[in-house]
Length: 248
Length: 224
Figure 1: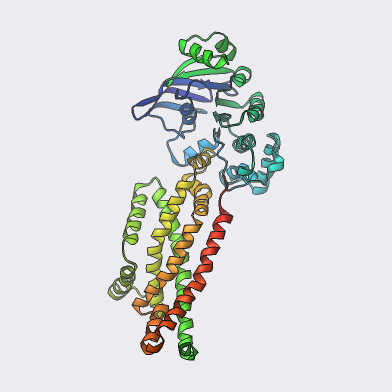
Figure 2: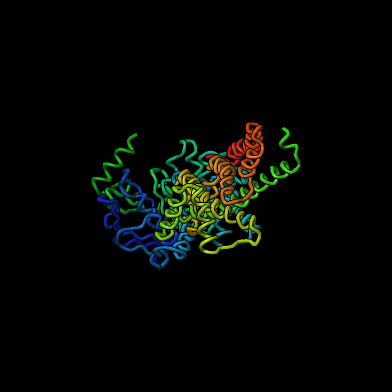
């Protein structure tokens, strides 16, 4: 699966929120086409890790490299980097005053300066891919959570990103809508998209991930293929965590 | 109603409200543009711009409008020699517009800034995540939603602006309050009717304006 130099490299990354050490000397590399699932208890720093990769969360020390380049600190270079890294949020964050199709075409038109007609055509194709082409002219509030999240995935894909970050994409969804979002993510993984997924969906971690990262108290505790991690967690923290979530 | 039956008086009455309309229109446009710029400065990450925006708001929001208008006349025009038109009325009109816009922009800025606070942080994050710059995020995602959430307060500001326009009478423009004062001076027997006509004219314009903005606010509200 992995070829050449890794796409995302975190080296000795630290982050403090005041006295709180949310990322504690985290080093991690994600290869091209690799799907890395990050799990761990609440407050373990996994969302912060995910958000640090496109610098929505600046780090206190260490380095993050994307596609061979260190993350730019600000301005146009940072905006350009973000346009190459898709991000899907827990609360969808679709632009509330824009239609579904406008949500998907906004980035290509305003950032990539694509022609509106071309962006529209590609946007509709992406909406079709995630199964909501027939809702293109509606507004986000008119869609269900699962539909909104699939639009959010299409919006990120419209930028033709080199990698996709998912920050607990199914945590805000009603249970019956989780499946439709995971299906889209699984098909993306199968198509070879590089993905970093923060989630509590163990089923997804088992069948779609190349590696599972377990975090606790800001530290990266385990890094193993899913089969190995779920069958034989090495650390006590991971054993404890798995026993709590898998016994129900 | 014999006062308004006199064509001279009636013309003065009409042209006085025409001035109010022009003052309101020109100042509203300028105040809106300036207010948006000031709001953008106040939410920007650049300390100098934030400071400038805050200084503007603190200066004009806390100064009586009469004083601002006086300054435009005695300060900008008489002392500093800023002449905006050869015609005296037109010069006073534009001096008034400057004062009214500078003053009203402070209120527009603060209304918009409170609107920015109603836009969930996730909207700006999502905008940055697809690669929009700070200015694009503000212009395309945040301010449109912020503006739509403060349509009703902006309506109130417009109504206040229209009534505040009467203060330009203090620097000699023959707008409504000035004409009313003259009419009262020369028609001591009809003070109350003259008051009622002028007040009624304002109300006739402004009550529908209020309802219109209420309707517009509902129509433009962003559904979440």
